[in-house]
Amino acid sequence: MRLKVPMRVCTAACAAAILAGCSSHAPKFAPPGHTSAARFKATMRPYCVRGKTYRPTYVKVGDTMTGIASWYGPGFHGGMTSNGEKYDMYAHTAAHKTWPMDTMVKVENLRNGRSTIVRINDRGPFVAGRIIDCSFAAGKDLGLDKTGTAPVRLTVLGFAGKIYHPTAAQKKAHAPVPSVRLSDFAVQVGAFRRYEGAQNYKRRYERLVCGAQHVIIRKFIVGGAPLYRVWVTGFGSADEARDFIRTNRVAGGFLIRPGK
Image: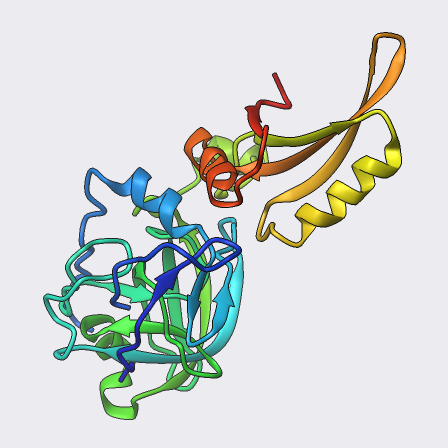
């Protein structure tokens, strides 16, 4: 069973709050709902639990992970999950510390060979060695209701609550598999005539970024002389980039689209 622990979504400074929550039958997948896009943006931010920072990651279909699975049930039924949904112990959902919300995941019990499919809609489990916390229904599929925990392999099957099924044409063309990708939004945090000044800013902001975000320096010729611009890249939306500016109080910072 999973422990109920307080959760806090945080920026680099661990500030803003987040909601806590953190077979023989056909799987029941609770629908993501109309706020899925907004939830996705929010829950891809770093967050802190018990003084430790967790940084959500971006994955692609076929990515795997192995570790220990557990389950959580009656004590959480009807409560709020980390992405704002009500927890339904009879739906096939699960908590994962870093994979994106609404990711579809196959969970295989390496001890008995049983498997099930879940949708990530919560954060956790915050216990050393555990990589996923399954709902009661999913845990029962795997036999966790009898053992409590078990070694498992996780495989990413799809996103936004849908399992990816490549067409024959896609297979023949060896088309790339879907992944959760970032758009090309960035924040300019400074511009310098001297490269040393840009390097100092780059080091300063490298302490604040995480996950898919990176700090880069781009050289331009302006007025016949070099101008070194410092950009923080890897934001998934304009709102996410503006949130970085606001949270880190980037004086003079503004949104850019490097690829445009």
